[in-house]
Image (cartoon, rainbow, N blue to C red; front, side, top):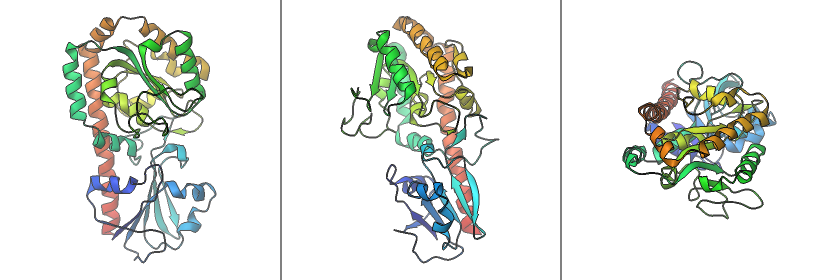
Length: 342
């Protein structure tokens, strides 16, 4: 039997959603005091165990569990670090996370096969990618209204920098822009009391606005390379919406994307900002590209956006995201099958 304890707050249906993708029979439990056998499997939502993990009490918490354990973590911000396997009383605990190293890019088929990015698979399943593709194809006949799209929620230094840059250069008319956790919040849609964009669900893509702008300016959750990072909904949205992107994040993040198999847009965007070590200098270089592109007419951007080379890259990135999602679901399915068959 596969038991699940799905008691998270940010993603309270993390396990139930994930396990729908791999079609396994499970039984839900309400706490760790449950009857089980050594040949059972227990799958845990990692969010409620985060404090125990950081305090070194995870082994104590799990010591009475006799069967293999799989812990799935949905957010790198919880600080579990990269995927790893530990032993508790000689029983394996598989800690599966979305974290990747920004210092040494690694992911995917060769280097980091056991990463599980829940947000990617959730967004591929939740958003109709066929609709995205149809909007992309049909949009060739229509000029879009905005140069840029940029979604920001939590107040952070690089997002403050971007906000001030847009304001000081009078670029707001060029943007669909949100920054919701500041003293003067800016919303695009959704419920202001919740503080999120896109109708209360950060994983849902607002296609009307993405397909009425040409570029995304993505301010990632982290902006330095001093800790583990991950690819979250802020980068998945432009990729799944067929949009090129400029990234305000840690040094080398574009190299991380390339390790995933994605293609970037160096032919039209000066991406040397990605190599700059100093944070503010890196943000400045990236923002100067925003300013440069903002000087282009919408007609110029439209012509470049629908050039053969850009179309090929945008299509590739969407397909690559889908393949990565399917591959990681297959890996998790194989792990659970192996554990259940033992």
